[in-house]
Image (cartoon, rainbow, N blue to C red; front, side, top):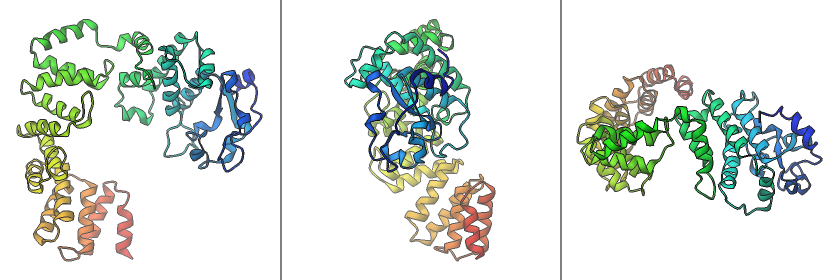
Length: 409
């Protein structure tokens, strides 16, 4: 199968829609006459290249009613529906697309999840899905080819979802093969065959596993990373945790850090922020600046440990003195917004924001501008405030210009 000559091919195949999708421009209720679910067909909005979820009342109301009119609707079977969303996703973004939305990609994952369930033997509960699936019951190979084609095209695109997954192919493969109701293997296994040339060779994987079991810390960490990141194999956080934990038991800083991270987020293991803190603390005690920041953050917010501002400041200061930007900013926030009642703390805030500002951080520059503009804890100095705002603007802060205008009035 190839991408459809959208929308002409399916218009010729199924005919034009005769009714608007919603009963009226208020978009409160769907017109039942628009449905052709008894034929196994879906109603697709042509303008879903501009706006997401046009079949829902909430999103329909936010967009022109013209998007709901009969001439802007087409019918398709479920595989064709997938292809239409793929076409929207991989083609150049429509110039009139809603700026805060990513049309197409959500529809791909939703349609694929239903198909994954079906091809893995799940019996559909809803009548319209049972009927839709009978139309494609013999098209598993076509479906896998469509997904494979999409992955190849998508990985060379500039879609924002790629940034979310870190441009890692097998994270996308796993997402595309996920189901709603069952843990799928059929589609995933076939996709892995499709992309076998990109996978880590099975011989290398087996060699690493043997070395890891024999106690090789490097092999344990490499396996943990492989199962974690999805670049050369399908990610599996549970197995990643196993190997990182093995390395942590050998006093590996990276192993402890990753075990802490997985506990912190509940990836591959039951979430336990107390255990996460213990592992972060181990790494911080080995003088790792980001871990020092993380321990300070945990003490400040009571994450996995009882709140303790003094301990938070201690750990953040250790990291901040090394030039770690996030620690410097957080220390500035603590001294100015939490402990500001003492003048010396405002001066401490200026110190830490100043160190961050030396790294051209626009947020720190904005804070310094606010301090001198408001004159709380230090004498008001509009000239200094303006200078800091101008520097923040130079560093790309989009709010700095307004602050400068306020001073100039």
